[in-house]
Amino acid sequence: MQIKETYKKLLDHFGFQKWWPVHTGTDRFLEVSIGAILTQNTNWKNVEKAIENLIKDDVLSWDKLESIDLEKLKELIKPAGFYNQKAVYIKNFVKAVKGLPKERITRDLLLSIKGIGEETADSILLYGLDRPYFVVDAYTKRIFYRLGITKTENISYKKLQKIIQQNIPKDINIYKEFHALLVELGKNYCRKRPLCIKCPLNNSCKKNLK
Ligand code: SF4
Image 1: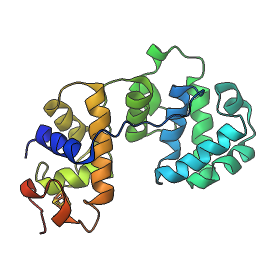
Image 2: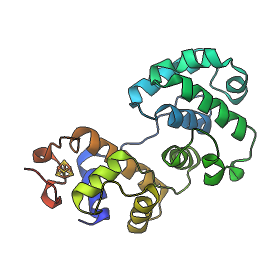
Image 3: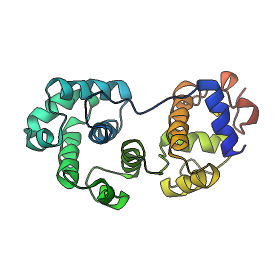
Image 4: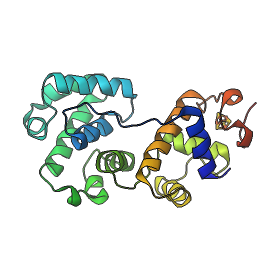
């Protein structure tokens, strides 16, 4: 099945997802970036709780995240899990990026920060800075493999990102929506044990188990 058709079918089924949720009054780029770090290895509900703690304590700003005591930061982001590491990653990120003009925030710069991998960097770039980088995650790899678009689920991040970017219009809104739609499909149907009977892609999927 063509990648563009997949996008259209998912959009018809789930509708626009309108990620990334941001609280009003906060710095969008900062909140998206902190969310992208916090969402590593956890679900969004847990991230929301951690972000709410940061907002309640009035520390979701560059200056306050830079000066907050590390132990206090760990406590606030605890709901997101892996809080010892993630607190350090947030500190690393703020130290490297605070005060930089947006045009100097490149993918390479983000990837040079300990704790920021490709998925996190691209989430920050796409959802925080409106740059055209498609975000690949484990759902994307699984779904594209099962659809028969890729030969292995262990395809490299870069390779799959390139395949997708070459097959959809270079449009940040489509990049944002498509990624969010793949997450929905992965959560609701294309799970480890797929629910193919009700899946919106089942007519054209190679691994369809119905
Ligand atoms: S038909 Fe099944 S394997 Fe294919 S995408 Fe849907 S849930 Fe996944």
